[in-house]
Each structure stands twice: as structure tokens, then as C-alpha cells.
Image (cartoon, rainbow over all chains, first blue to last red; front, side, top):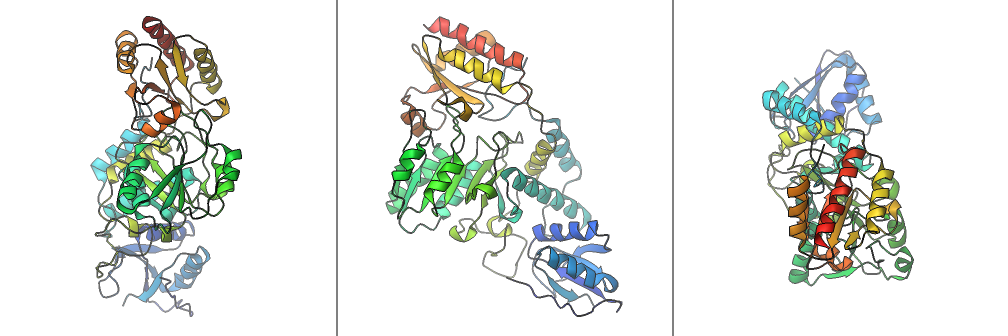
Length: 85
Length: 374
């Protein structure tokens, strides 16, 4: 399954976003990429309203979301983006 | 003095890193996936670190295509029983272990699978020249034991893959991974089965497989993966699609510890080969090894002219403290190829921790014991 990301200028709106992945392997891969690029993030449980996929996901903040998405795309990591409202 | 020469059964000693990582798991570890609190995150991180380390050892960038299993045997069962055969025809190398032959025999009885042995020379090495003449049309799969657990012969994977063309190649790397250089991507190897407790020096209960083409394998294990939990179907994603149930997390920690703390080989390979060549000249003994020493791994066997192989193993243990395995080593096809069925052989297998002194002690013990059996 290929996840679609909405890459439409999400920065600076103060929202929190969740990056959802198919499995733990991809969470860890993404986490490492965000870490080495000094992106502020938090690993959090996936709210059941969004997904029944793997137990953990990554929360990033509005000011960094575009950069985060760019990094994940560049590294060919599939994900789904949702607003953690 | 290290007198343990049964590393083809399981490696001993293990690197200190194995203990350290297992202790770390026992004191701090949690589950793999399923939740997101710190303990689970850290544990899952180590599991994925290990998967990446295995991918590196196998020589592939496709780390998500590495699947953990209980051992090489369960990995081979998953691949061989799950393979989507069209013609029910396979070729195997002449030195296969029962971990390959028994699942294939099961398929032979159930579906009439045809099993042919690849053309080979007297030491079981695949005859590349004859391979050119073999007909691989309607062949589903070729299975090759990379390094024999009986005579230690290393098969020429590159040449085999070049000759068989598009036919998928499954390599049983149980006795080679961690010891013999391996590059699955460069050689375009389709499937690899491995164990963690032999050449990689990790704990028992670890192993797995690599699939370049997962679409060729039907799933044979089903259950919870912590992903797609609202579905009654297994997920299609990797690695979770082939990894139901909680993995052997403690063992995987130990395996990572082994890889991180891999020792440099202490003995000189040339010293070992010289001793082996000298042993071949001794009367009253037959040495099972590669005809070409460039194809020799750190495993070899001997067959005394007289007496039972079990008595020889007992004598060398009683008199010299040497720990080895005698018999058929779960490889009747290999012994059939080498002409040592049903008698079997006494097998010796080295560790990177052995020194040149240990090697000299071993070969002296073999010669002295052989003198008693003449």
C-alpha cells in the first residue's frame, strides 16, 4: 500500500501532526532519519481513531512538518499524515 | 587451550557482547512493537538494529526483507513450503542438509515434487562446466548449501547464479554467514536462510531468512503482528507480514551483541590448511574436505580406516579433551555424495577464538588417535 501525504505548506500553523507507518521497522527507520536531521519529534501511541496499524507513530510539529515530510520522501519511507487534533 | 571443535553444531565461546546484551534485555527490555512507551520503543529499536546488522552481513540494502525466525530450519521450511511452485521441479546441491531435504521430500510425497541433484565433482562441489549443459527449463527453484556442514566445501555461488539464469536461487547459509564473505545484492541471490548461533556467534533460537522476491512465497504462519489489527488477514507489508507472534527478543539482543563484538580470527587460515593437507597424507584415515583448498571453510571431517566413528570421537575426547560430533550430521545426502553413508564421519569445526596453538593441538590429537585405530 502506498500512503499519500498532503504536502501543502503545513508549517507555522501551530498544529501537531502524526506520521503513521505500516510497521515498527518503518517507524524506526523514520525516527532515525528525523533524529540525525535534528527534527523535534515524539514517539507516541497511535490513536485508535486514526489507525489500527502498528502501535507507535511519530508526532511532529507544524513548524517542522514540511521538512519532516521532505526527509521521509527523500528516503522512500511510506507513511500517512494526519492532524493530531 | 580451547578444545571445543564442534562450532558447526553451535559456536563456543560466545563474544562477551552476547551476555551484555542479554543482560540488558533481562534488566530493561520489553515487548517488540504493539505499544509506544519508552521501554517498548527501546526494545523495538534494538530488534530493528539487529535486522539492519543482518542485512549488512547478508549484503543487501533491503533490510525490511529480512525476516526473523526461530532458526535456519524454520526459515527453510517457510521458504520451501511457501514457495509458489509452477512445475514442481527443483535442483539441489549434492551436500544438502536435512533442513532442506526433509521439507522437499514432504512436498515430493504430497505433490510429486521432482528433486534433482546438480552435477558435481567428487568433493560435492558443483560442476560449473556441466551446469552449462543442464536443462533448467521448467525448474522452479535451485537450492544450494553455501558451506557444507560435513566437509566444509564452499560452493561457487556467483558461477551457479550466472548459469541458472532467471531460476530463483535459495542459499542455505547456515554454516557460512559470519564466516564466508556474502553479498546477496551483488550476486542477485533471491533467498537466503541463516542461523544466528553458528558463524554469527549469537545465541541459539535465532535465525531467519532474506527474500528478494517475497511475492514468490505464500505465507505459512498466521497471527498477531501488532499491525492492521482490525483485519483478519495478514498484512502485506514487510517484515511484519511474515513475522506473526512475539519474536525471540532476548535472543535477538544476544545476536546483536555478537555482531557488535565480533572477534578477529586468531588462527591463521594458512596454518589450518597446511595441517589439513598434511593430514591427507596420513595412512589409515580419509579426510573429507574440498579438493581445492580455496573452497575450504573451517569445517572438515575424517573417517578412520578401522573402527566406528563414535569410538574415535569418544577416544579423542577421553584422551585429549577434544569436543566433536560424529555420525551423519543430519546430512545423509552429503554423506551419500561423499561415499560415507551409512558410516558417517567425525567432524571438526573451528572458531575465530582458536589460536594456531589450538589448531596444532587438534591435528596432533587426530594423528595420535588415528594411530590407535590403525
